[in-house]
Image (cartoon, rainbow, N blue to C red; front, side):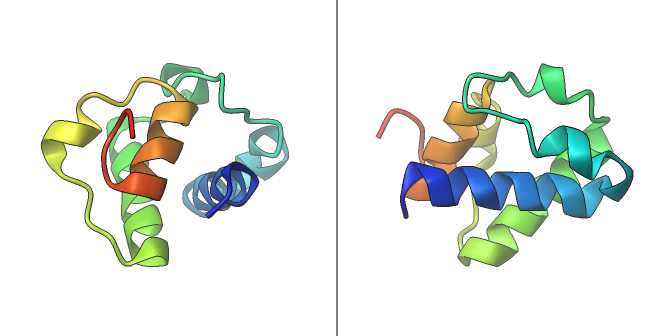
Length: 84
């Protein structure tokens, strides 16, 4: 999966968990931090669930704990771990 495809998948997941902010999430980039998204912890975990469902992967909690940027999340989606 390309970076463009992965970023699109992340944006789609964000829109699914917070549809009232869809327009804002269309501007999300790999450089943004998870904190920049201003999601509560429940919405963040729902977004991860959407990504897991979409990819058929399960992301280990220890890897999720390391995610601080959208780029980190994209790496996790693409490779199942950070820094791959």
